[in-house]
Image (cartoon, rainbow, N blue to C red; front, side):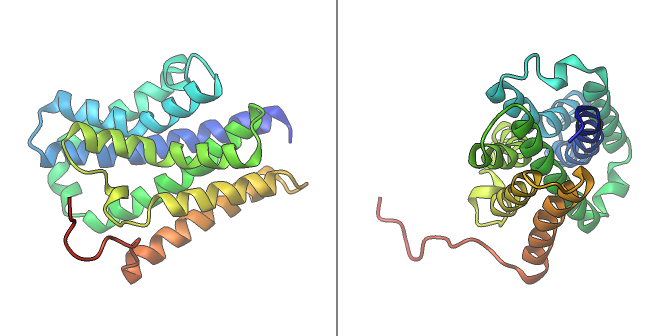
Length: 211
């Protein structure tokens, strides 16, 4: 695949995912009654955390979040918008749950393809795609003293891993990059939305824990 095409596509998808995740992070801050600084921090952590972890692990330093001003401006804008219009945003719970699913699908694909571009094999690249999708949300939940959502039965990490794996495998073919990204994105998004609609959840322990 042409390097310029890959780079441009990854940046566009990355920024879109960052905006979506930053909105969800800032919304958590508002609901926790944090001030505007808290909203900006949680928005930034949620939007940039997964990509930051990915870039450090693959040696893409300095991370894109620090090397490109757009990566910092987007979560700041998302945080300010969410803080200013949170009453309206709060009433759109289902819409932002949908946005979160879109963000997850975007990030798992960009993370996986960037890992491949840096020479990683299929399995580690797919795992890093998953980490890119779930990393920011885990950091957000830890900062707000919540058990991360992915550990409470929500089918979140598994769709991200599946979408990343599809993107990695198809990237080894001669398909255009757009189709590769679309296939991985659709796999993750479709699984996540089906889980939300049908109430699918990962198995949890049965009965009381004998600790």
